[in-house]
Length: 168
Image (cartoon, rainbow, N blue to C red; front, side, top):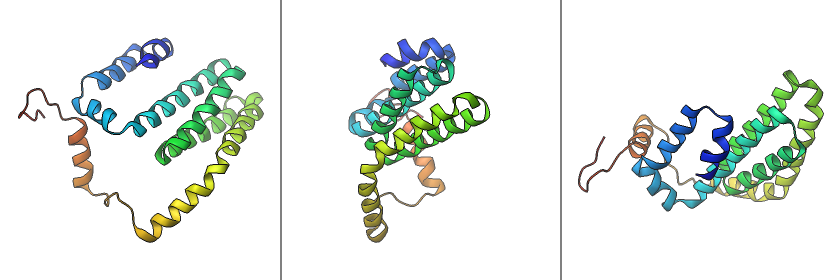
């Protein structure tokens, strides 16, 4: 909440900040989601902070922003594997952006990207062991179908105004 209101509102348009606040407060299932699954909440926070500092890096190129980007990259990657994929995509974007648009900063971007990857390497052994276990014993997530995707949207956008009334 703090970062959406006080930090992101300085660099993002008011419409984007308003939508973020709307999703934080208005969707009943989001509050249930945040209480039930704290790990995902921290993962989203770290991914958001990584995104925020990537914008700061593109704008100001301060060493502090690079260091905080690496810190939140590692925290997101350690929190959840899906967050790892999100921040890895962001890291790849940052490298490609520096290669195409800001060539003079490419080595700086690349150096901090290497720091981020090296910081994650000790956990890579655990990741490989877990993937090996899951590939042999199966995974708890059901197969993706149109019904499973539709049920996700129904859960996220359901509004419970009154007990017994399901809303949308």
